[in-house]
Length: 365
Image: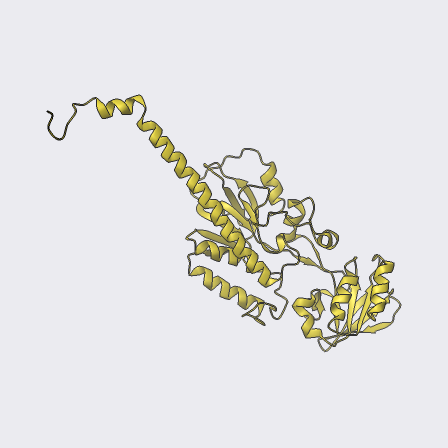
């Protein structure tokens, strides 16, 4: 999917032998909460939909989904399996596949040829990108292995589970002070540890942290300490050990699905996202992008979206895609009707209608 939107915007006329490919009203890239919710809305509107998914959701390492009313505590993969069953009831197809390339089709109207990494080609009148982002963690040894368990990033996703525990916030960017204050709401034992080459907190940030009882340690971590499969703390560059029960990080976005984000947008419109995450794909509130026929939902357009808000966005965008298709179909129908009416008054049609002997009903007097 590298450069997907950029290639769409810059592409030249491309002809292909279309006819044998499967065709859908909408191809959804990504089968997470946003993608499946969009597919559900479209399927219930009697649209033909294909969802292409790599079966590697961002939250797979987490044990449970939180803040999802009615599904609180559901394991992430179980939630997706429930979603797949639900969309199948309305004819939505879900297939494993990573999108490798997209180009405009050479058929009338807006549409695309989507190519997967195994060479499969499918046609879609609209494209809904809901592929999420891929988290990239600081390279501190031992950190990645604990991701989603006791190495965390979101207080709303995982904060309750580490309440009243000792938390170390690994500062790698300007978000650290903000994160520390968020987790301070959950525990009074929070320390900010400055990573190597990390920007020093501003004087304003230091004042705010000190006022809330948050310490700042300028001793970069070199290793995550684990004992009996339990995080015990951080080994610092000085050789000291900092005891803690959880480590909070600010993840970035790296290669893979998120490379689409970097190439698809010049700048994020969120100040925090611009500082700490990969650029997002700019879109209207409806989910429409600058490329006609391409829509986005979920983390590709909203870095702060959790599972429930991603699902809500998918529903909204799916509905808007359906409206867009209806508008195109209506314009086509109106054009055909006008052409038919215009043709009925042209000379050949007029002569065919009135050249024959007239047949009168009733009686002339």
